[in-house]
Image (cartoon, rainbow, N blue to C red; front, side):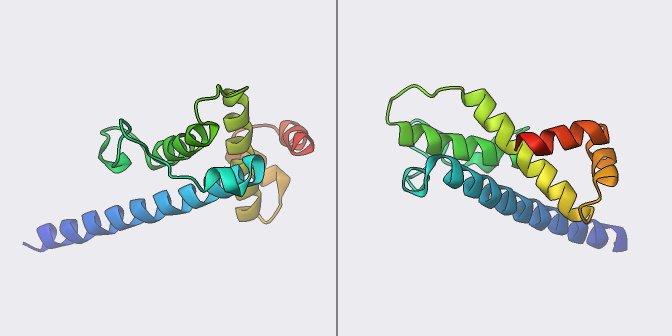
Length: 132
């Protein structure tokens, strides 16, 4: 009986944590896109008819994938039918910058430790930082 109650609490805690992570990731990516394409464009509704209205219901999609999907919906809605240019590079560079910034923050700007966390050399980290 005790194991079931503990498992129920753990499951509820994990679900609550996942929702908080989704919210935080969405907020950060949205902020990044605001800086790149402008707040007037990104503030448009994310989902249109024919798109998924509940991103959380897609089996196998991670919280980060849901956030990226939602932000891309906003981006494409803002394009209003115009084709994007260099979309892959734009998204990858923004996500890379966000990951590096976050890891540097939690490592108190210690580049050696941050590089270890990221799984890259310190030289590569410095190169990425100079590219930002």
